[in-house]
Length: 218
Image (cartoon, rainbow, N blue to C red; front, top):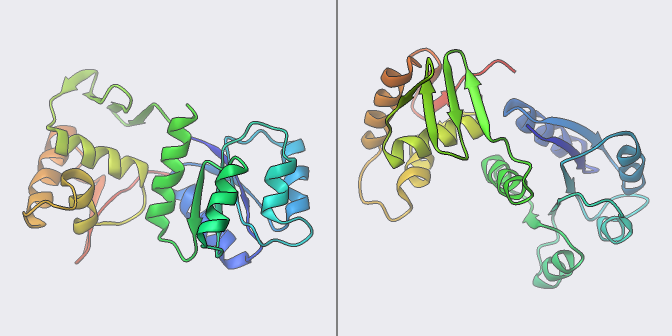
């Protein structure tokens, strides 16, 4: 997974982002002002920077303008005007997220930017199951397993959001799209099939009155 620098001066938000990204397998370094971004980059190699705009010492716009390393950047900020978005993207940001944001959205944006930069995880392994995310193949004990497109999308969503509870509605949106007319029981049927095919009966946890969570050691 990726090594990510979180540059956010609000400690509660910084901690929340770090906790959620760590749960899904990333490693993180947190800083709380713009000057510390450059200090961190001298000590570490990062795959991605999550960068607030309104920070002490050096603001996020100035940081990205002065940055010489080729590292993908996502702005995370309360400044949501069109002018700010356009300015941030013109400076070279790969994405721009306005606070408050949902952590699942942040996770998806992070995955998207890492994928475009060629730094996303290409595979996943858990016990006797391996998943080739780029090739969209799943193996159990080295034997290919057949899955429908919706089942694979569910597996991919659970892997990318491992250790995080996903609602049935969210999984329905991911695998079937927002315009799907069916109900959430469809998700239950497909999760049942995935559990049976992969022996993940105890790995995919049912979250009472919500949905499901892929439980993976951190």
